[in-house]
Image 1 (tube, helix red, strand yellow):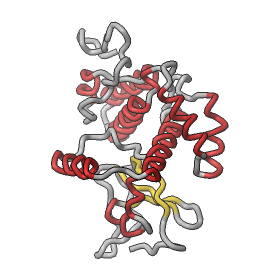
Image 2 (spheres, rainbow, N blue to C red):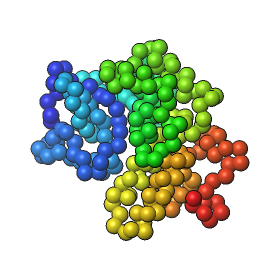
Image 3 (cartoon, one colour):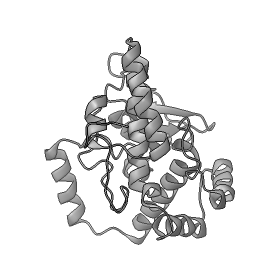
Length: 252
């Protein structure tokens, strides 16, 4: 196991990683395992460098394993976890009443996730619509880049923007998570494909996603990507007429 430095690694986020990424820790065999599901915990060392870890390895590395549950999770809208594990997590959460500190940590993680989704992750999708990057959040984002943290006032400000009725449904947190997840999956398929017609089709879907910030169930099925059962179903994202591509046989 990679040795923790100066009291332990700092958990930063849970995120998607390239499928050929290897865990920074070494297992019992001395080898670095991979991430077949393409998801990892990102930990920061004392020098500020970030490395990917599997969940078990991350729990061994960090000083307080419970803190892993408090980092922003950009993979939350990936394929639903196994029913047994999901039910167990719900049951455990229902028995515990979060403390004020835990609630504050959860709000901070939610604010960071929304900030980074709008200003960095979804904003970096090629040809994405310009409304994703929100100018009033630029100063907060620059502060977060410098310090890696947010003040209580900044957390309140970000969450208020996300919940505001003037924020379009397609720019709410859950839909942006769906966009980011679909973007990652489409990029992986494009990189793995060796058929020009398939690459063109997937790129067309990716461009639609970037422009519209939604995919229909028909488009998801045609792409062959596995998404959350409720992906792109947040209230209001399809507009008043609820018109979705694919329902009339046309995917774009």
